[in-house]
Image (cartoon, rainbow, N blue to C red; front, top):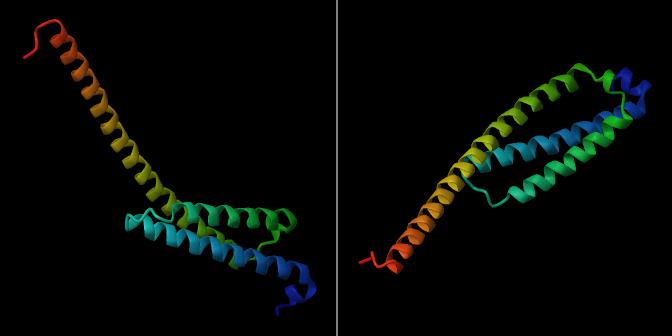
Length: 130
């Protein structure tokens, strides 16, 4: 145990809890990113639940901790985690754009089919059909 931890046992406990929460968040982000890259969307609800739980834990810890007193290791850890979050956001953004494009294609196809059938039905009723 370092001198600072010996002098501040509550801070040491808070730091440990924060690091464990960050570990869980990082693990969840890694698993979600890997699943998205493999196009396995079966666990997205579970990933969202786990991320929400981690963020709740972290926000509670940060509220009671002296965030300005983070050591270099914790600061580096948060910076590394930020990079993982950004990579995760990027792949999520790409998946959402793909979903929007597919939805747009389907919507346009439905509108096209409806307008074609409406036009054809009107033409048939007027006696112009086959």
